[in-house]
Image 1: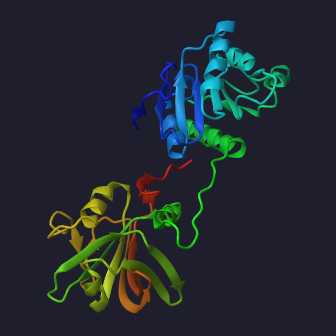
Image 2: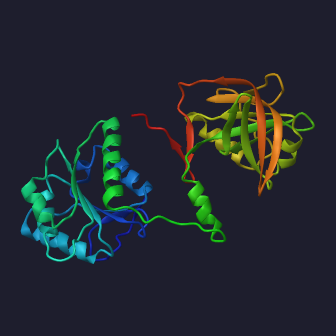
Image 3: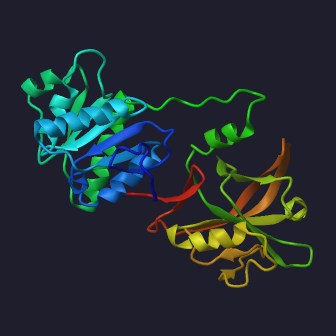
Length: 323
């Protein structure tokens, strides 16, 4: 996460994220947002928010006046996150006649009920919610989830749309909103040499008979090898195998050189220590647009359920956070 320059030269701020995204104005000491406040800022940025940090407002009338000036200079109405210690400066800044200066207000506090009905009445209709301050890592995740849920209700992002014939990048980004696991698909070529590539287009098809599928781009250098292969294997990666995913996603002569693997019945390479591996016979190949859909009948499987999966979402590797 990299801090970007202040969007307005006259404001003493730090900011993160895309300036075109909806604005989050974080007021006061950032560590009051959570013990690991940078993780919270990162979560907001990854959720498509432009976070602006202003940590120098006090509880005096001057502080409220300075905050109101900031709010009027921003290009759009921000959502505000503040601590209970800076709430006294925020309330007067938002107490205006006419259109509200903020879309909503989240107050991070020790405990609940930081905003009294009397104070809330001064907010000119700005939705407000108290979020419990967190220190422990698991509690920080709950705090971030509460913040994001509040923002989605009261300061939602404008949805993007794809229509047939428009920019294919938009469609790709929309498809990227479906979180997937990451696999390495393997087989043997005509000379008996191992072949493998990274793929996240993997899915179960049927339990009876046991069928799975993956999709392979026609432009892949390995497409003819998989067309001719009678057998292949799907290796589902765990969080510790992200480097392996990178190796098999790049073009290089020997992707298997530094990767531990074994063979079972068919000779298709099985990556040692994978989260799950499926050895399959090729059942059917369906041509679909610019990809081949390769369906396999599972002959043998092995899995280790206590490992965390490697995930892929919106063009980045992710990990699963258990609550």
